[in-house]
Each structure stands twice: as C-alpha cells, then as structure tokens.
Amino acid sequence: MATSAPGVLERNHFLLRRLHSLSGIVPIGVFLIFHLLTNSTAFLGPAHFDEHVHSIHSLPWLVAIELLFIFLPLAFHGIYGVIIAWQGKLNANQYPYMDNWRYTLQRVTAYITIVFVVIHLLHFRFAHWFGVMEYKAAKPLFFDFTQQGFLNLWLPAWLWMVIYVIGLTAAVFHFCNGIVTFCITWGITVSVPSRQKLSVAAGVLGFVLLAWGVVSLYAFGRGRPEVAEPGANVAAHAARPAGPHASP
Amino acid sequence: MDRMIHFKIKRQDGPNSPPYWEEFKMPYAPQHNCISALMYLREHPVNIKGQRVAPVVWESNCMEEVCGACTMLVNGVPRQACAALVDELEQPIRLEPLTKFPVIRDLLVDRQKMFDGLIQVKAWVPLDGSQDIHLHAPRISPVEQSLRYIFSRCMTCGCCMEVCPQYHDGSPFVGPAPLGQVALHNAHPTGGFFKADRLHAIMGPGGITDCGNAQNCVKVCPKDIPLTEAIGALGRQTTVQWLRDLLM
Image (cartoon, rainbow over all chains, first blue to last red; front, side, top):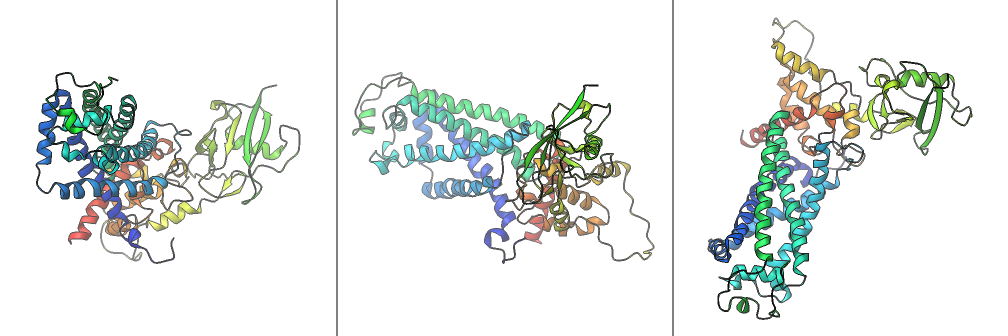
C-alpha cells in the first residue's frame, strides 16, 4: 500500500477507469460507426460521398464538436489506455484460451490503432501542415481530394491500402471486442450466456463495419470509373503532379 | 519393473537464490499423485545423475483438493499437486512453484499477498457480539444457498491469481479470488449491511476496475467458482454505488 497521500489519479481512479471504458463506446465508437458509414457512400459514387461529407461540414460549431467529441476523447482514451495496457503481462502463449487471446488482441489492436489514427490524421486532417492543400478547401469535391490522397500522395497507392486495411481491421476489432468488455465492466452482462450472445452480436457489427470500410477503400483505390467533372482533380491538387491514377 | 516416473522440478535453494531445474526418476507404481510421488522422492532424494541431493521442499495438507496448500504449476498449469494424478500426466512431469508469489524454497511459496487482499476488500461479516438478539437467523432460499456455497469453496489456492495477466508484482490489482469473496459476503444477509464498505474498498486503485477481462481465472479455478460472473456482478454493484455516492 502507498504510504504517500493519494494523488489526483488515485483519488479519481474509479471515475477515470469508467470514463475510459465509456469513452471507447460514446463518443469514439459511435463516431467510428458514422465515420465508416459516411465513407462507405464512396462506393455508391463520388456524388453520394461529396453530399454526405458536405452535410457533415455544414454542422454548426463543427470545430467545437470535433474537439469535444472526437479529439479530446480519443486523446484521453489513447493515453490513459496505454497506461492501463502497461499494467498487464500478456500470457496467451502459456494459457491460450480464446478469451485470453481476445484480451491480448485488445491490447495489440490498441497500439496498432493509435499508430494508424495518427497516420490517418496526418494523411487527411492535417496534411496541410506538410504543404498539401487543406481538406476543407476541397469543398465540394471531397471524393476527388480523398482519392488523390490515396493515389498521389507520399506513398504508393497499394501501400496506403495495406496500411488502411490493417488500421481498419484493428480499430474495428478493438471497438467490437470493447463493446463486450464494456458490458462486463459496467455490469450490464453478468452471466456467461449473456456475454456469449453479445459477443456474437458484436462480431456481426464488426463484419458490417469492416465491409463498409473495405468498400470505401475499394472505391477510392480503384480509380475514378466515370468521367470527372471538369476541373475536379486539377483544382484539388494543383501542386501535385497530375498523372494517371494507378489502379491497385 | 523398468517403468519409471520422470519428474523435472524447478528448484530454488532460498528466497534470493537463482532457480534451477533438477530431474528425478522413481519406480512406477499405479495411482500416484504428484504429492505421493514427491513423498517418495523425499525418502529417496537422488537425482537423475545419481547424486544424493537435498530433498525437494513443498507444502501440502489435506490431500483432497480442499486446502490449496500444494498448489503449483504442473506441466505449466496451476493446480493442486495432490489432485494431479501421475497416470493422467504427460512425462516428464514438470513441477514449478507459482510465479506470482515469492518463492521460499523449491515448490514452497508465500501466499500472504492473497490474504492481504482478503483484508483489503473486507471479506468478512462483522459481528458486534455473540449475545442473543432475539431474532431468527436470516432465511435464504435453497437456490441462493447453493449459488453462494460455490463461492464459499474458495480455498485461496492462488490458481486464478497465477493465470491473471493483470495480477503480478508490478500491479496493485487485488486479483480474482478476493473479488469473489466480496461477491459472496455482499450477498450474505447480514454481510450485506457492509456492502458499501466492501464496494468502496474495491473502487480504488487495484480494485475491480483493474480487471482486464482476460477471464483466465474462471478457466483454472479447481472449485468451479464463477469468478468472471462475480466480477460482472461487482461491476454492476460498483456502478450503482458510484451513482449513489454522487447523487445521495
């Protein structure tokens, strides 16, 4: 037992742990669902995607919403989560039970997701720090801007796709497995059968989210099937070498 | 006559000496368990090289899997050595001391940490005296009684602690066994009067929130105690307690 007076973290231990658990579902998990849903509209065509992204950009207080409901919870969940993850000593090699693998993967996917989210933010949200046009300026041609980000920015398109498929899978697993552990932590599912049923439901949700993510990546990666609107790519990426979009 | 029982034992001469492996062979006899075999080796402390060595030190008591004293790693899995039947084990039989508790000598460990944990979570029913209070004993249904009986079988053997990735030297986590006892004593008719005390004791650092939901504990419990369900139930109780503390 600690002899010194408990610090802020110790005194608010329960609250912080529960906030960590909650923040993974609301708002981060909810955001992930809507993010992947919006992205999946790219598969339906650039016009659909542009329309949906535009409607998001029309929200009032967008910067405040982004900060309060995305960036702050993400930072808290990520940083406090790493502190928690350091407290575990993985032993799935010695005790290879399925639940223990899920425990292990929950931590492995956490690290992958953190790295991926940083890459993803630099790739699209903060690319203007590196001299690329800011995504907001792409309005209303968000599809083209995003596609150029995959096809003509920094890395070969196939490598972007590999990075995104890995990041997507890790994030979706972490979220869906997190739903199950969330419900144990909060005492929502107490009995083993209730947890098994929830695991199945979370697995189904996982496949839906994965499918949304994969079709959107496909839509951006396959190149633009139909004729582009005049000036679309040029306006979005004047500084980039205009070249044929390689298909992965 | 040639049939032998082959042991590979992880030994340690003192609390601070380095561990080493030593092998022993003894004549086969049917229906040995690991403790009866260790008793033979105590009488014939000759290792596989033919050297006479100090007898292996271990702890055992009941010989019927109810006291927990002889808990050790048998072929890598924590269990009671007295209930580990030689005829059912793959040879060479590997015996190791538990890794989550300080080794005193050879297979003997100091499990005091677990009893400290029971004190920390107040796993008892306080009495204010033994005088007659002119009331009948509180009544509980047979269904309740049989559920609680399972929890009362906990023998503080340490199997659940051994496999828990969250329970180790560098972590304040109290471990699954004491949490199971909190669930038991909170469910007790008079023990329930002190439910809030016990919940507060597990809401700080090292308490219920430090469980990582790996769920290994329940897989190795020799008494089939539903530890993960207890932890889920305590998750619910602490959620309610936290709201009560906040609002009332």
